[in-house]
Length: 352
Image (cartoon, rainbow, N blue to C red; front, side, top):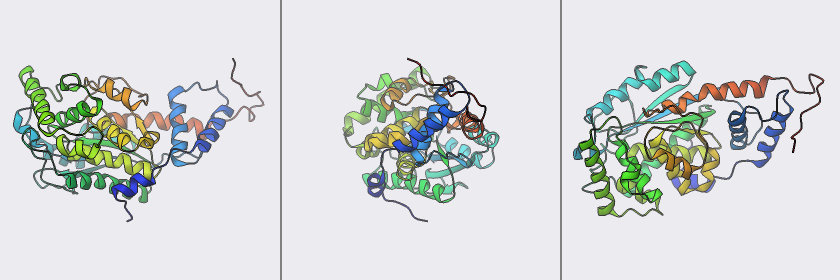
């Protein structure tokens, strides 16, 4: 299998094809229905044409890649459950015994859990960078080299899925403590105080919230991550799961593959990738507005409209997979409906 280094991926990313986008809109406008009446569904299929460089859009083979990792910051009492839960849920992905796995089964998508940094060994595919991150409230979460390795693991997986014939990827994560790391990254990149971008995650008490915010404040103050250097930010206050998803977004863009962002944590990774290379934005599809409080600011920064606003905050990639049926519905019209010419109807034209 051919893969790319981080620098190779960054150098290979180019903007989406304007020609394919124009051809896709021409095709939509010829279909016998009111112009642009499927709104964001049409826009997204058209964007996918631009991503892949052809108006002949197909989404036959879909995968959710779930990055599983442990976070040393759990030592600060920032979570409701212990670190051992990461492995339990990660292995449940393989048993179709998680929400995301059931969503994948019902939507015809494959689920691919990856151990990118869990503390224990497991039956999940081993791409371990290290056995969990360090406690970022005490020391940097990882070294810069480890951050790059995690990014390149995500890029490698994008290359692998492309070679295996996948048409679209979704991003997911599992890691106790990862709303703390993602809030820390969001705080730095959005230049917001931690309180503004930090929520209760999987269900913290008020006291737990205070500890969570304090841990983020301590880590940022102690390590001074450089907002203009995403690798520095990830290495100091991030997690291996976030780095892996960031790499998947970068790899998807380099390979002209659409990659769907899930909720808050996944959108942090999407923002990281876009900050590293602005053209990545052309290849990102957002799915839903998470219930996490920092989501609105993140989505404003990414500036790609979402499909769903369902008060979801489960993670795992559930929101990303939930839009697969919507894309399939839109594509069935795009590829299967008759045109105005087929029906001897004069084609609609935009009205001023």
